[in-house]
Image 1 (cartoon, rainbow, N blue to C red):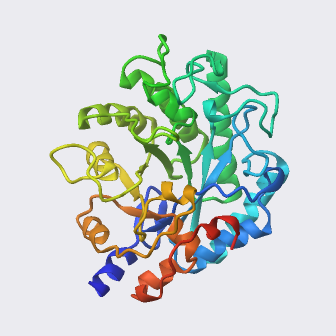
Image 2 (image 1 turned 120 degrees about the vertical axis):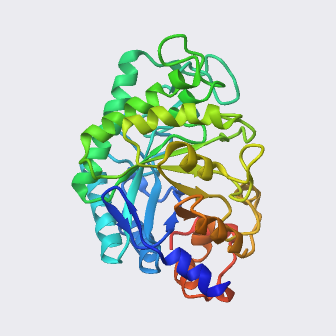
Length: 369
């Protein structure tokens, strides 16, 4: 299937006003290599190296918006403040010089934050109902309407900064049990006002963020929304048990101006709902009419949870992934750990040199290369 893989992945893709040179994206992966929240020259080199090796679209690691409770580390980059933004400008410039496109992932961790964590040690964990991901009530601050407005403003300002710095779009982190997802998921959203209740009401906060971001940037500036069923520390959680329930989540986001959905799964080949082989990205595209990005153990024979226990992953063929891409089930393929283990993964794959691919080992997590 050699030439078929290269031809399918090499096709350009248009997303709103952006044209990506091929179908390969780099998945966002938090690495903790930005002291005091400032991405340095090593971060620029890290992303540019993947772009130079053929990755069409770089989606950066999560980067904190300007809100006191947004973060939980002083080594994760921020997307606000003069020094941090200057660092990000250099990252975007380096990726463009290497021939790639790049979007920052904008992030608020919400109730995932541990009290007392930097960068703002006295900021409380915040969420829709003050409920932690494990169901513990009273673990943080239940957000007021003013709090919601502050966070919406933070996302919009970050998106405007991204466009001003020369980025090619933005991704909103609405997955994995972080703040936006805490509103989407009934397990953490117990509100009784307009932001809680059924799926449409739970999606209201996410839609307001997307609409504010859309209004803050140019009409042709792509807005991507990342979502997932699973949550950190709760891998069996689900936003939706049926396509109808999933569509209820997607529809308000489409109306708010989202251009594409990045559907995070741990294994891209698993079907999402009974009666269809479509994965979450496939369903997102079918139900929304928007572009979608798939992700989940691409190019590897082990999923990422085992990585935390020190497990390595061998190289896995992507023939079945490419067949699904050919059927237009989704539009872009996000590659994560395989690109950490082998920065030249895209170049080798696009050239049919898959025999040269390097397996992933946990050591790749500890170096920025």
